[in-house]
Image (cartoon, rainbow, N blue to C red; front, top):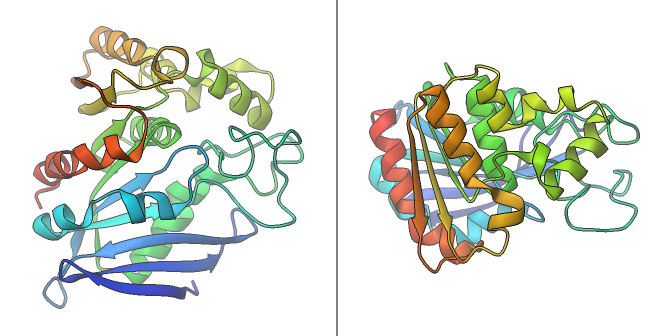
Length: 281
């Protein structure tokens, strides 16, 4: 698969790159970033996938996530995809709201017109991009983990639950854990997947757990000053589902933190250390 390099910058001895390619899944050009730490020639490295939240591109975590020092220390490749297809021909929300359409792909494969042609972020993140990254970067496909923030936390949890043999670890910052029951998720899942709520369950972490999906353990942080905590995030529902299913969950309430990258960057190194321990890095 052809890959175009947009930029390369040295950081902590490694290389932060931004790349573009023509996606078969989304039928658009897609940008993503990859940090590769310094390593011996021929060495394969563990890889952490990071899924971003509403309104974000790859650039938000790349510029504000403060992950490179920890990745260099632990020998982790860090991959950050975009959150949706983009381009003049890509349909967005007719109301131009931030929580649907461009920048809000919700990591699903849309089935509803006019979104079904381009909004195939599930297949893009779980199939197409991993193949591309494995072709061009020194990843050890047997040592992968996944994490994300908000909408991306939703994506990370659901992808881990549906691919438990692929990822050795999964964590999230302020994830949307039960999109079928909160305004952001109801709007997105209804718009992309239609009104049949039975189809939503495979993209709802709490519903997946209720339906028997398992994962070895989760780490989840949220801030108690998060303005979206009560209405949109509902970590209590994930806690109850994991307890009932016997899935180990470390759920940490971080005092005074909000939903922003100030919160994420504060705990990023801690999450990456946790991932590295489980990746054998």
